Image (tube, rainbow, N blue to C red):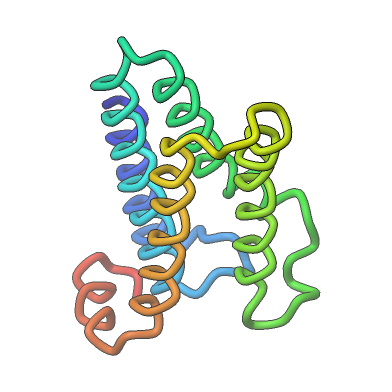
Length: 149
């Protein structure tokens, strides 16, 4: 809960104070980080609910950790060199990392555990929502209300 509360506060503060990383447009910053926090918290809640099912729990926690690692990945690569759609590179990198678990399952157990279908599906859904919503015109008044535009 603290991670989600502090993450949300950090997003709102950065928007209001105009201290975004230079490669971020305000709408993309708001939507991308909000979706990441929502997917992260959803996966953690699902993992907590599945804590008695060890195989589910550990895979869901791994997927949640991958989601929350994306901002670190963004700052570890010179993403500004990828142009205005730099975030697609980070999305592809995040999915590549997320697919490592199902591949290991497939090789070691000869099947992919259903928790990965849920976890990787949640990551892909969050990325799709970000890509669809961040350029939307309805964000302009939201950003103005937050003092970011």
